[in-house]
Every structure is written in C-alpha cells, then in structure tokens.
Image (tube, rainbow, N blue to C red; front, side):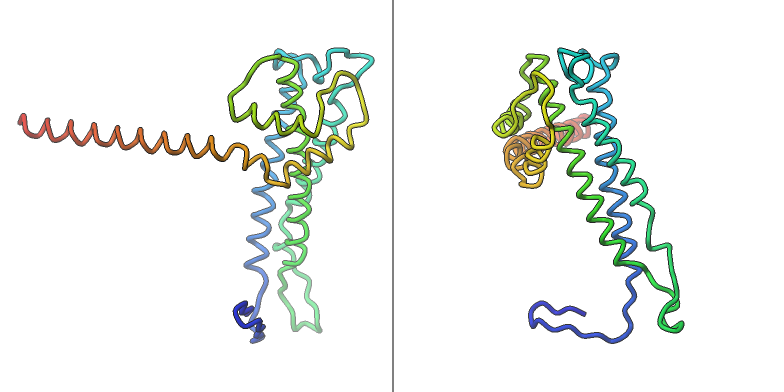
Length: 219
C-alpha cells in the first residue's frame, strides 16, 4: 500500500501485479487503435484515387516524393505497436526457487504501454502535418476549429512546396501533440457544441412532455 498523505509504504506480502498488468495491457491495445485508424486516414489522403488531392500530397510528383516516406514511417510504427500490444500479463516464469510461481510481468506491461503511447504520438503528428498539407493544396476553408488548429501548426511548420528533410517538422508536430495546445485551441468550440446539444435536448424533451400532456388531456 502506498499512502500519499503520510509518505508511507506498507508491504504485507500479499501483492500481485496481474491486475494492473492486465489494465496496462488493455491500455496499450486501446491507445494503439488511435494510430491504427490514423494510418488508414493517411492512406486515403495520399492515394489520389481516394481523394481530390495529388498523389502523396505533392504537386510536383516524380522529382518529389511528398509524404510517401512519412507514411512508411507511420506504417512501421503501427506495425511495431501490433507486436507491443501482445499482452505480457499472459506470460509467467517461476522465480525465487519456486516461491514466485505465478508472476504478472506487469513491469513490462507498463514499459511497453509507454512505448506504444510514444509511437502513437509520432503517428498522430505525421497525420496532423498531412491534414494541414491537404487543406493547403485544396485551397479551401474548413471549419473554424480546424482552421484554428491549422494556424497553430503553421506557426511552427510551413507548408511543403518541394521535398525537404522532414525530421525537424515531424519533431515540431510531436511537440504540438504533447503540449496539449490543440485541445486548448478546440476546447471552446467543443464546449459551445456541448452546450448547444444540451439546449436542444432540453427543447426536445420539453416538446415530448407537453405533447404527452396534451394528448392525455384530449382523451
């Protein structure tokens, strides 16, 4: 037991790490899905048969590869996560002369969960750059919250007009992802939408209640 209020740690010898190990294994699987679906969206962005965008998000294909290699990087990270998502809590190797006869491997569950999160942040950062590039190529104005996010990105990373070393741009996008600035940017819009939904649900509920009362009175 860890008692934060008194900074005390009490060990009764009855601990077993399988329960947090399972939770961390589930966490890794759930977080991985964010990157998995992100990579699917990237494929649709880069494949000209799936969008109105130029192949690999570059207008000068042939001489320029655009985001093709960045997509390969994202795909490799997603593939790596699939291996990391194998649950370590299903494994057990007896130690300590058989005293620890059923162990959780929970330490590795925690370490690989952090590794998965790190990979997912990189994949989402790459998709963020691709999405902004796609908007620039379409020369269209999107929704107000997404325009605000794009403005945040473009303060650190300029649009691509020809191939350049991408490492610094991807690292800048990762910092944006980790900083929480995207959430702070869109939070007011999310809150406004939530308030709008609440208000409309109340109006609908009031309508049904009044309609039910009128129907009851008529009968």
